[in-house]
Length: 346
Image 1 (cartoon, rainbow, N blue to C red):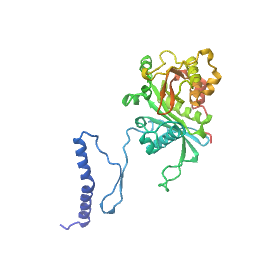
Image 2: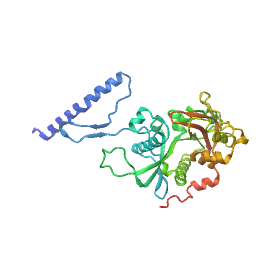
Image 3: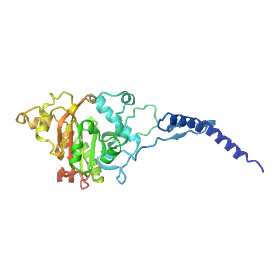
Image 4: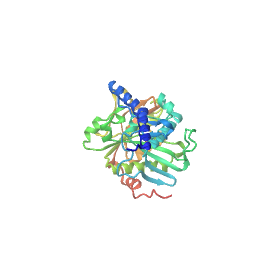
């Protein structure tokens, strides 16, 4: 038989490639298994012998990034678009926005990982959906100057993190449960599908009515698609001195307290009374002016608030529990944020 030199050379190269790549990872896999550690998955670039082109291994995602059956783009006003994050890169951009707002603009204290990466990161990011507001008329300034050939990308200017109850039950539960006892609310509403809203932030120049409306339009489309019955979460007032926040906290306690069956109470070890001023001493107009725009937005659509505040020293805020049954949203807001609203105009 005539030898096939091309075939033999190819076989030899592949044998060398296997020795170069697979054998070391086989040994590493064996050691990690013996130590009881999670299986190792290579990430990044591996260089085969002989100067051949590198092979890139992409990290595996724990879950789909786009909700099945829900279009990523959920609305648009002018150059602003609201959409769901569909790639790991887009989630990282949301994390960088959160870092900029929470840690650079506000008084949150970053962990070592957050400080090194310049991103606000926690375990919930991997199991949540991420709502983005993107300005197509502005360019995202990447923090990596070493990537001069990257095409300019439109700027992420707002974000919300969305956690459905089924995902929470499969993983860590709701983030809110670290501050409030929400079990009685769940028990009082059996069969209801809950959605947790969290980690909301908007760049300062974009804190306008139309940006907030786009965020709510995106949330409403998501709520309808997943047939959500109620939304809950923690909303924040800036500052950690409840005495300085006595007026807005007392207003929420006297005028916007959740009804029985919806009123979660702060955990005993974190409970801070909200009833700091008598009802007759509260000036509603002044209190509304003292509330952050996000909480005023919640009030407008029909949200109510729980019993007790919680001081979050890491983020430099005082948190309150907010709950919004979908049935409590006024019809005029359903029409305003629903598909009848014209949000596609350029």
